[in-house]
Image (cartoon, rainbow, N blue to C red):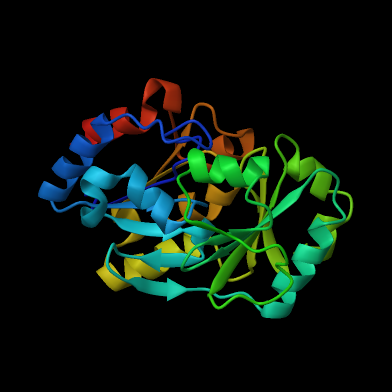
Length: 263
């Protein structure tokens, strides 16, 4: 019997970097809640962005945010995997050397960018609905728990990072592609799967009682923590190979369809 449903957002429920969610998911979540099935939104997004996206049911669900860096309820943070300040500074300095790339520093309170007029900053603010602060010099520490630093490029983040940035930082941190625009840098102990396992332990829920949905590399650990795992049809091939099932794409409301069958 499934007691826990965990779904990625971008590329799984919605088009990458948008707030265009099918409102039918809210009714589905309400029905899951009524049956005692917990719903967790798991994403590279920050809490504020996910909370706004799921506003009609925001207080009834749990959250794995920032690529697994934070596990929380609506009211409180249950766990935050904080990065070392020297690593944050080093990544920020190195992103400056990557052509046409920007850096996003993600904390428990909000996220930080260097230029409020940049395309990345405006996109995060307007489409993702992020809580953002402009900090022109992100090599200086901020008074926040930093859980993720992301490299942004409008179309080739993974490719641009590959020659030297990824090999260098993979020695200390976990790097994961989160769509064509993002390369996420997080502690090696931090991923959606580890946060999910922690949540399963807190709630006393077994892997066999868990259903997960994803589309990208940063969903692989999470998919492995579920007895019933789904890649959406538009997922990367590596994700489809790792998942137990393939659902229809987000354009065809694959997650909603599977959950309605579950209900």
